[in-house]
Image 1: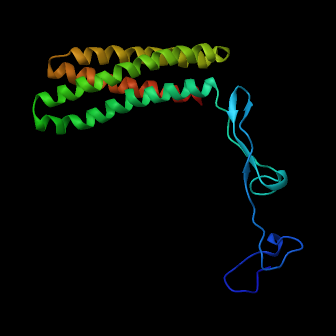
Image 2 (image 1 turned 90 degrees about the vertical axis):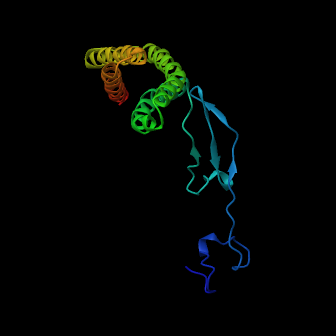
Image 3 (image 1 turned 135 degrees about the vertical axis):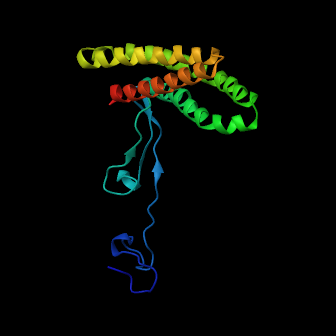
Length: 194
């Protein structure tokens, strides 16, 4: 039922018992302490009398943060830098060439200072992934993992060869192989995670 006064729109159910009908009930939310669940932190909240923040008795809780979450986050972050940085740099090279012959080289050198540490994080968290997921490693999962590891190795080797190349053809071939293999490793990683 709507309040007969224009503009208030208060529902009859929201009125506090024993009070003037003109006073709608105010629902206050309170947060309960952070609790530990399953090795991670969980934040929960409930409304008055434990009915949940929005009524109905359910409350809410965030998903737990665990070491698996940290491992996956670091792996995805490093992949973002390694793969995304290569794509971004490849898109910028034509513009950078117009600014001078040394500008693309300077940008690539600077990118390498970020990309190679990201690649190291990818390798370390990849090893951590294999150890953590060892119970899954059999059959088609194992085959896909081996292919991904080979593609990651190709990506690293061709990136190193690209960084040392002096000819235009070497830069183009090794740059393309690095980008394609990095994208393939990313795709295979998503395939393994899903």
